[in-house]
Image (cartoon, rainbow, N blue to C red; front, side, top):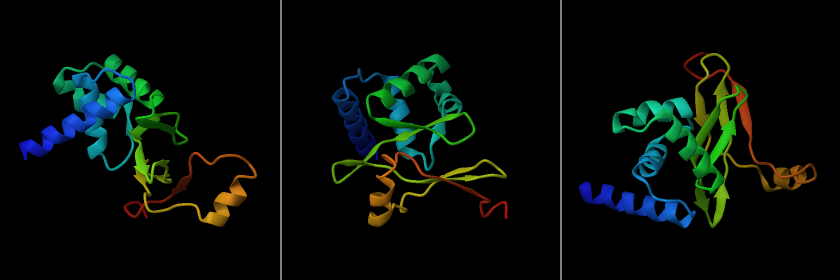
Amino acid sequence: MKHRNSDQSESLKRAIRGAGLRATPARIATLKLLHAATSPLTHAEVSNELRDLGVDKATVFRNLNDMASAGLLTRNELGDRVWRFELVTEDDGHSSTHPHFVCVDCGTVSCMNEIKLTAGSLRLSQEFGEVTEILLRGHCNECE
């Protein structure tokens, strides 16, 4: 198990350096956390998780924004004026985006990784511009 963790750390270091940033322990820890996350995380959530490692809120904020600017993370605002961050994934060499579902009752944010625009919808949406985010709102199964 330790070997796998070491392999992941090396892979994350390479990704950070490849984006032109220094591979600091705080950045590596941030990417590990976002890699394990099942939904986008806020600055506050990342800060709470990394506090025991001695990473302060200002460093978390700077690192999240630096890594988003470098293309390692996406930064989305889902209608509540709170930035959420998640790892950029590669799908056939193109960064993949996916819709998010926000529960209007409890505020839970869920990734809808398997949902993509159809070829026809993508073509029609290009008449208006490039689609960078799809957000669905409703009542989650827990709140129904």
